[in-house]
Length: 271
Image (cartoon, rainbow, N blue to C red):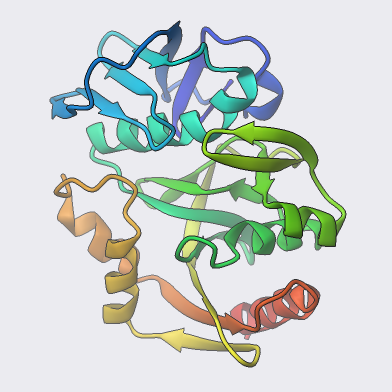
């Protein structure tokens, strides 16, 4: 079982959130430790890296040894491994393998995956949840890792904020996980790799509108949302991704119009 292109072992209680991992995904054994994080200095070298996650955990990742050692103030719980820790490990593992990753989710529709991209609190998770309610499979939430033009499946869940969870009537309350309170919505299975067809960029606006984006704008927005802020190992890969179809979705704040939002996106993609 695995996620983000990794075949994972070492942690109990997370398999139900993972997908069937292909044999050519990278094996990684997760080793959990509790204790003070002695350093915040990060580095990468070949297929090895050390970095501190946004949640404050220290990860020592070695793809050749097939090991990720995670040290945090307390031994990370299974729900914390599912998110946010796996997304950080998956993004860095992708970088070490010259794969791009983005702060984005993705859903499967119209014969492939569509990345859903936006700044923090732009409504990504609530939009992804609305897609799943409408019957479109989730590929990933929060972090999108790419491999040869395909989006790699993430954990089978979406983490919502309180207002979205209550408005949509979805999600299990987890309390404080990582740096914020989360309501976790479990979702169904998906293929481990889904060819990427295009991008949906989210912004708030006065009216619901879906408009095409030119390639330079898609490229600029993708560069801002790279999950690993280090020089690209394969700069041409980002150019190829930016050449895919891009749509800008503007919608009013609030959750009342999510059904109409999904209908507008689907109509634009199918037109």
